[in-house]
Image 1 (cartoon, rainbow, N blue to C red):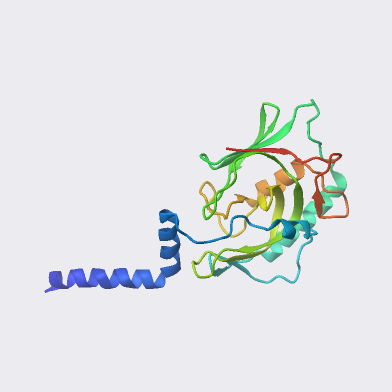
Image 2: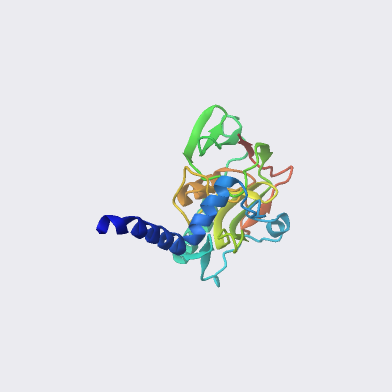
Length: 238
């Protein structure tokens, strides 16, 4: 008798799993078929970047990723923000070249899901990243054109389960329009695509490279746009 009921039980189990994991299953199906319908192609719009002052938003109390409320580490993000400002008072940031006159530049390998920071031919940083999953990360050679210490990012689709609302995203380096290299506190799946086109980094790595790269963020402000006098570090994405 039991063996006759087994197929029915398996069907019931499958239906139950789909019901309770509907958004996750739907996301994976549309992603694999390449028909997500999600119109978000970067973490921010250019006007949102230009209007950002990079300040930490103390009033934010909730974060959403893939349509679900997640653990929002407000206290640790605030502490990291404060520590960065304290260190800024005491540390000189190198320019587009190091002490030996070698160019500083950033390489992002989409195939390897890795970021490497170079000074000439010398590797100074290397760590895993998460590039675009719902929208591709643009490839080519760019320069960081805007930096913000903190940034609100929102977008995605509530219907498709890809909606996100992420306050106080740390250490943002915009290299092409609204695409940025930035820290990510909402997942720990680095080494695999996870974003809407941006480049997600582990928090500690994001803080380190933010201070290493140009343009230099002047004292007293938390956002800066690159200029001929304060140019942005070159970023090569392939």
